[in-house]
Length: 468
Image 1 (cartoon, rainbow, N blue to C red):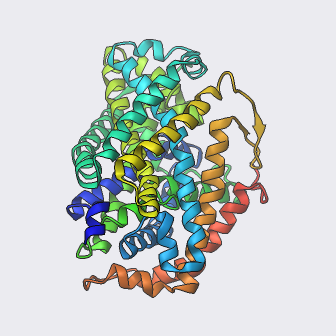
Image 2 (image 1 turned 90 degrees about the vertical axis):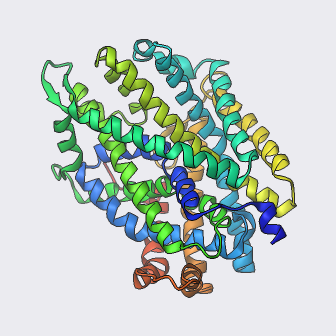
Image 3 (image 1 turned 90 degrees about the horizontal axis):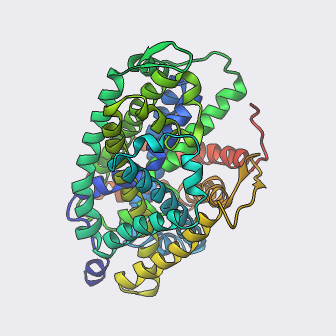
């Protein structure tokens, strides 16, 4: 009991669901999901993602949360508690958030910059060509905004699980949801004039988003969309990065784990879908299909231009939008930070304040290097998947394309073939809950999920080429 008290715990299931959903609803959902949906045939991507979410995603999410609650340990030590020969997974699972935190804070700093720009009435300047490039290639401003973002996250984590993570999530998540709904509804009502002079409405963009488009979709293209949807689940559900194990360790033994996981799934998938409704109809109305294909620059280059073309209301919408993105970024970043901090507390018996400050300093140092990667430390390398990369891109590739699939594969092998799926099912149903997807879970964790993950890893590492 003393150990549990020292580590902290969620006061109730609602706090856990909101915190876990807050972790899931981050930049990956708000930026990456709409971009992948736009290039993946709209409804084709949505259907594949939904199927994978209730099968593959559910399996990994249930596994990690159950491991956390069963061991009452962080990812660094939880795997070793489950089976001594698999303790090495915990090291990798802790390395992932350690490497993600610095560049996530750098991107979070970009969001702070744009929020401040629109809040102070400089949205039109943010829409100008070269604004984003000029900002990230600066030597001081990106570092300042990175520090501000990291400082907020660090302060929340120092406050603890119930007062910090749970308390902040209970306030921010309802506000975030209201903003998402409001902007999504507004996005559907707009009518825009494209650069070629044609007009389109938000409803036209919604149709392009949700209606499956199989035009020019070859088998290779379909496989690429499938792998995009699979890869997106790591971002959306915060799995294979230790976060859900850490959060699961703070859940009480009498909580209904099955029900909570279902709520997280619904919350996350709904916000991911609404993120597309926010962004795609607006971009489609003002810039057409070409605007939706902007990729990573969609949020920081294309959208400010869309807001600028809305007239005076655009600055208000832009402010609300980047406020919502900032809230989402903070809730995700604090969960990434907590995954590392909880490991330091459990492994070395450090106080929360000491563990948080040490990890915060490490994240700041590496975050500064990431920021300098666009100016004094700039270089380009070609990654195995064919893309060109700087420091931020390399960290992102190593964590998301290599380490996370390896962690998920190893976790499936441990659960499916060593400790057996019954261990996880028993933990999830220890209070008599009904495990409705029992057979699905067993099949996924033993066979389907490892197979899909191996293919994803082979594609991400460039061993398999899916073509164009």
